[in-house]
Amino acid sequence: MHGRVKKDIVEPSPEELEKQKETVRLHGAVVHATTAYSPRSRWEAPQRLFVLGEVRAGDLLFVHMPLNTTQPFGSAIQATGNATIDWLKAHGRSVGAHDTAVHVAMVVDDAAAFVVEAVRSGVRTRAIADFWADFPEGSRFFHGVLSPHVPREKSAAAVAFALQKVGLPYADSFELPSPSHERYYCSSLVDYAYRSALQQRLVFTEVGFPLMFVPKSFWEDYYRKLNQSLPHVSGSNPTLLLHSSRVRYSQLVEDGSIFAPTG
Image (tube, rainbow, N blue to C red; front, side, top):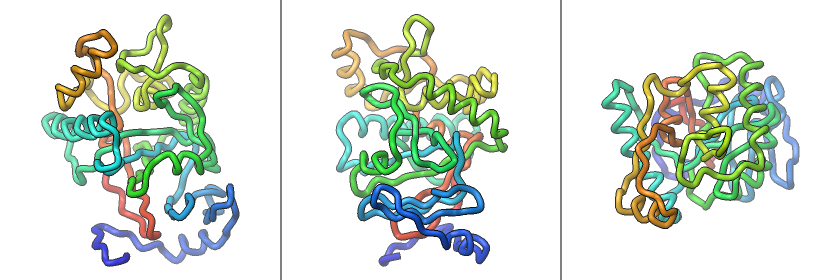
């Protein structure tokens, strides 16, 4: 633990340890495989080991970046995440750990070799080794699983929806996607993928979530550069999905410990 104190750490059971015996190589990085479920459920980015339990297509990966390494945009997303937690509490959601996220991506395959994500350059697929490398030292990663259990064919449909959107532009103004102007930001890609797969109007919340813009001065300047005013629309953000009652998440840590699910 290198002198760090962690709460709610779950020690792997003997059965889990048995599953973790196989070691393979992926892109020159060590990948400890859980053969009973996924051949690549433990990843090591260069100089960084992350531990993940069972994983399958349609699972979510959330990213929290330390404030001292984020650009103003990322810092604003984190501030908005804190406001989102307050909104969730006001609407009856019990939030344990006050974790925030600046990004969310969807696992494409059971081997967890790729993710699909919406980034500033547009919707794309990304090799998992490159995904880890996209974020600075000190970033925290969370593995999210939809709860209650989503049938495999439904999660596969969500992945298929997201993959169909590869190449579409990023929704810079966080607008709702429409047939004539279809574009996505990171959490809206995940949100609409599961709306489509589950045929539900809302998946991650029970009521519409009004987009929040904190700090207001940053977002006013942001939209001014887009020649727009602050919108008053519903939508989502990574922290909203992270703390949704439909998501159970656990933190990946670099020293090999596994945090208990907190979401």
